[in-house]
Image (cartoon, rainbow, N blue to C red; front, top):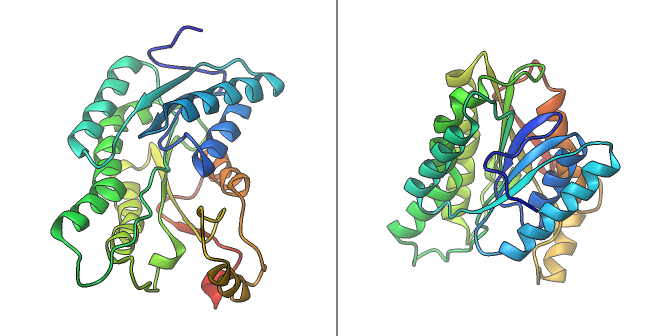
Length: 262
């Protein structure tokens, strides 16, 4: 199978960061079913991203679409490299649009208070805020050419716990995720009216590996719907925002089973 410079599909083209597994893979598969060609990025899992690409082509075909898919390495901790990558994507697109950018990649890393460094804070902000901002800026003219109803779409990922709550042991992560919601508002104004910007704030959507059972019990006890979400549920929300939320921009939407209510 040849690797396209700029992959396309019957619906257009979408870029999904962190697409090798978990929520990123589910988003890629959901967009493939809608007919989007896919630019998928990964940091350390090339084989897993390749499997996402394979599954996306299969899922698209089952839905009656023929799509192209490309996988590229990308470390968002290097903001200059992230901006350069987006510039190459824009150049490869030429006069063609990129219809959706989903900034899914994240780094869920604990940092004990008392040992937090400036490098810790800077790294988290580069991954969660700076690189997505610079990438979106570089891709803005390409997004503005989208023929999607409502225009092109950008989807960012915050965290429901970063919106009005605090969590010990995760200060750099929480600060960065709180800034993502502000970034969504800023981009919504900067890119209007041609591009819509949405922010998703998940609670627990698929437990992290080795998550303590007692902590799971405590979280679920305070979650009105009584369970964790699934990657597929998050992916369906992204699909709705990209394709159907044509008169919404700048808002942050929780997908947390009601956890923020308690």
